[in-house]
Length: 458
Image (cartoon, rainbow, N blue to C red; front, top):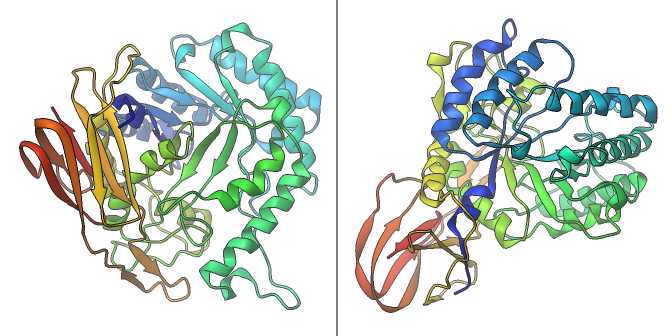
């Protein structure tokens, strides 16, 4: 089987972090415990907005990045916001300030670890979108690309395009609004609206090294169940010259009745319990690799603290977190099931070091299910890892009532045949810290149902 380095799976996963707006009185109070949790998670890449003005957000971000970059964590660094872009000259001035912030503080920023700088974040989304948002988006992208490329120290940094938000689609004559449409009928409506917004922006491939997209599994796509090609196709007009793709946001809202503080969620993402997210989460970076993406960043590390507002930004942020924040006191914080699932996943695939050429795995895989996916990896020690998972939905939630139900996934028997008897350990990172089985076999079977199975083969 074709094989890639194990570290590739580890590096396919990133985490969105918000050092800048976590505490209403003293932002910095949250930084140290947040960094502690990120290091406990074992993440190797984060996405964190940079700040160039002297304020508490900049102080908090500097403090957090200083520790993370010292630990070797790499950074995807959004900079410009739409308010920075009153003109091309203004945008250029702000880009200069951001780049000066990085180069002028080498004790904070390890330039070698800055991987990417994206364009405006969801410039077409939110309650106060300027009428000329598309023009401003182009101006921002031009200023960012030209500024980054003007400095040799940033030659390795990829400039990514602006990730667009899913447009809010209202009803009209002969067409109901999205709340009145079943899931399968929402997809073409979303895609049509998104394609219109992308066309308004136009071709940015001359000012972008990579495409940047936000994909929230739900009615509008199937990131866990297969390629979300409809939405990628919708934004391809922005990249007349094909560009690699990075997913800088994806996630699941834990707002089902089964969860603590369960609240109704009316956004566009999939709503499901934490136990289901723990089964989805380890599959996402593997799906990203399978689809050829540069990586995928989970949204997000921390929930916002209570009280939660059903329709406000706090609610939209509150239930995506990998860490439950019951109060402002960090001692009340609780890592969720998906945090531990990804902690186990990252520990399995972590294999840092110099680049090496992975050797093929002499194995074959047979299964009685068409939705099985398999990827092979190798550690520098010579051990192989074989990841097996199913691209299946696990939960269905009614958006109107917030009532949900688990979707049963019958186990499928998968047969793995090796070139000779080898030691094998079976891991289920969504739920178990230790191997669930081991032995020495030339051929064996394993049940694969709703969660990722990783075989460590000696």
